[in-house]
Length: 349
Ligand code: FA5
Image (cartoon, helix red, strand yellow):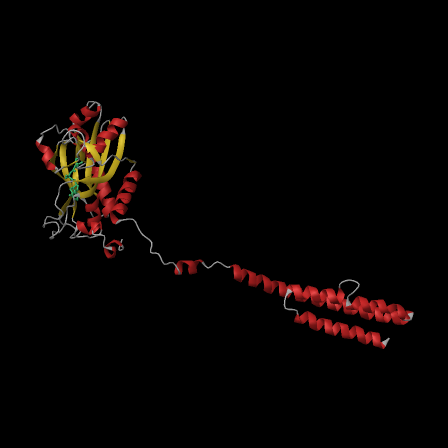
């Protein structure tokens, strides 16, 4: 009998050592099978030998086997929990996605919107916030939209205000690259009845020699409001609202009498010089003001061209250079930087 009790003790201590040495949950399940799992396990084999013993001895050895089984099973459960936790952690570590690592390894440089596009988007947003809609028109225009409908009949002297690039299409000088965004006013008024609150950004073309303030291809944004009872005061207020929103509350605007064939009265609008805050400097020719664009009340002849009754409706229009706005906002002294494609310049914005 003592033999058998010793055997139980040996199976137990050997079993506990193997449980502690198991390196994975799979190893542990194999050890468990050999020790306590089913008829062929080590403890089951000892149990089978109980039949050879006398009743009293059988009880004692049986108790020893059961106690050994309880301790072995408890150690297996404890070790299984420990091994499973370790394996879970290892799996999570292996599956981890390090997003900062992905950014760190990125080799291609990200592009950005050109500064003039950024200025255009910002100006659009500003007018949309004031209740305007955004419209666009073609860059290749007919003479009628670019000049005639805007109160400039053929041979009108005002046409020479804009050096025009013509396209060889149809009759001579009937098709051109638009010299300003004002023809889009005509297209908008043809397509919808008043009330109209719309801004029209886009590219314009002139036979201008490039210099610090001029490019042959540049950008304008046009504004048009048509409704009952629109006054010059509404125009002045709108210009003041957008200039201080875009350039900052310290920058103000003023209107000076001017001439455009499609507005009456007409004005040029200027903003206080952002370089010297209106004190006078080289950029503003010591005047304290910088010209931004033109504006005025829509001429009755323009309303006539699109069939709007000038007795019932009035309106104002304005148009100014987007490139010039971006220059003033970002302290850029030469408009040609925008098209030089120098990445060192472009990536600053
Ligand atoms: C016009 O083009 C009128 N259509 C503006 C207007 C609209 C008046 C609605 C009344 C009512 P002007 O030729 O002055 O006006 O041009 C307006 C602005 O466009 C200029 O003040 C300037 O900011 C910009 N601009 C004109 N030519 C160039 C150029 N070559 N390069 C860069 N910007 C230019």
